[in-house]
Structure formats: structure tokens, C-alpha cells
Image (cartoon, rainbow, N blue to C red; front, top):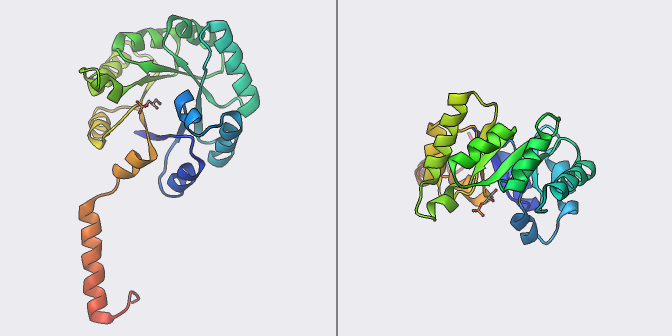
Length: 220
Ligand code: G3P
């Protein structure tokens, strides 16, 4: 399963990149607004992660015509390898369809139902992003929607990939990794939480104590 970092915070990206083999960075308008910056920050992120990793950037416009213009602006300014995130409104679907036979990659975002994902796949989206925790918060089943998308892709042999988003706990990620989900995008804190374990820390403390008590050093 591919892991992406859902943030635009430069120091968090650098810190995670140093340790974890992630596949790229995803952003959205709220994430960028949180950093009080936009294009400059996106260019910086692209520079840090390099073109071998993926950067996902979302359009803000509401009409298809403006979405297409913004997509081209982003591709020109940041680089034509970025993936354009397009919300699954009707105008968004039209935009995804517009890019279907081009070499511009799209991710259909803010998916709350598997039928929305089905339409986005038919329109040619390269990625589908179900909002797992936001679906859970609507008394529905976010992991279930992502699993349904995986089945739809399999049933109809779509080439699109599920890049699930909006996670609030490791269990949601774990369930999707057991379901063969193609990718997940998670916040830096949650990504670290998916790896950190109290049992490991306790075991390492015990090894260190036993060694230092005997040899008064941490060397061989
Ligand atoms: O990439 C979409 C994601 O950022 C939404 O997550 O945590 O705001 O529900 P969240």
C-alpha cells in the first residue's frame, strides 16, 4: 500500500521523508490555508520531494471552465507531473472527463459514496479519494465505502486507484491495508502513530538498561 502525507507543512514533510518511505504529498485548500500560503509553498514542497514522488494539488474553482484554467496554471507553475485534485461535483466530473485522454493525471476528491466513485472512474479519474473519517462522522462506514470502491474497480476492471483520505485513527488505515487498498494519505501525526508502539519502546529500554547495568557503556 502506498502512503502519502496529507500536509503542506515543510518541516513535517522533511521530518517524515527522512524516515518513512512515503510516495508523496497530498494537499487541499484547507491544508494550504492552514499554512497561510499557496503557490510558493507548493513549489517548495515539489522541490523537497523531487519529481519521483507525487504531489497532489486541488483546484478551488467551481465551474469546469475555471477548474481547467486553474489546473493548467498549477501545472505550468509547479510542474506538469503534479496530480490535479478535482472535487466530485457535476462540474468536477465534467472536468475529470475533459482530462480523460490527456496526459494530465486527476484525482476525484471528496468522495462520500461508492456511486460517486463509480462515476469518477467512468469519467477517467486516475485516483479516487473517499473521505473515510468524514463518512464515519456521518454515521456511515468510511472504510466500507473505500472497500466498495475497490470492488467496483475490480468488477469493472477500471484502471483507477483508491487513494483513501481523511483518517483519524490507525484502525481505519489497518482495515484498508488488509483490503488491498492502493494508497492512503494521512497526517504526519497519524503516520507516526501507525508505526510507533509502546511495546517496542519498553523492550528497547530494557535492552539498554540490562547492557548499561552490566557494562556501564552503550558500546561493544
Ligand atoms: O485529503 C483530504 C483530507 O485532507 C480530508 O481530511 O482530516 O480534513 O477530514 P480531514
